[in-house]
Length: 99
Image 1: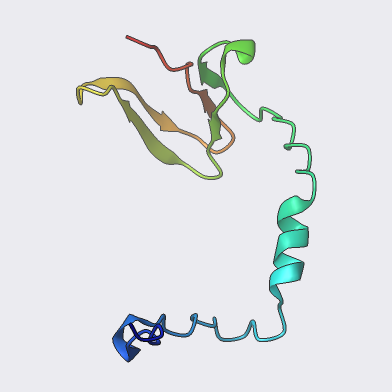
Image 2: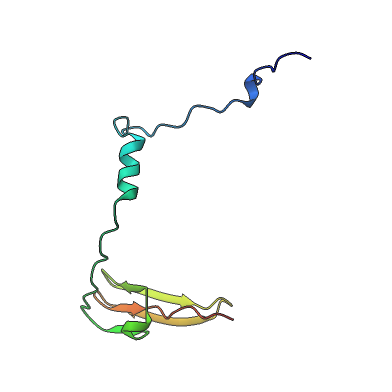
């Protein structure tokens, strides 16, 4: 028997992609950011009508920064909620249902 041979050139990994402009960033700095405790989420301040679920029942709230049409579909594709939102109006998504 002979000694183990090095892996052929085709099986080595390519060099990792370096994003242009981030040459000074190190993996240690990225790890420090990821390890930092998440900041408190911003408090929702309604600036208009709020549609949808009750305040305590919702985890997701969408607030229009400018006039927009919001259409929410059920999993089967039917429309659950549709509203022409004015700036400041919000929609609280109901909690997901389990079947």
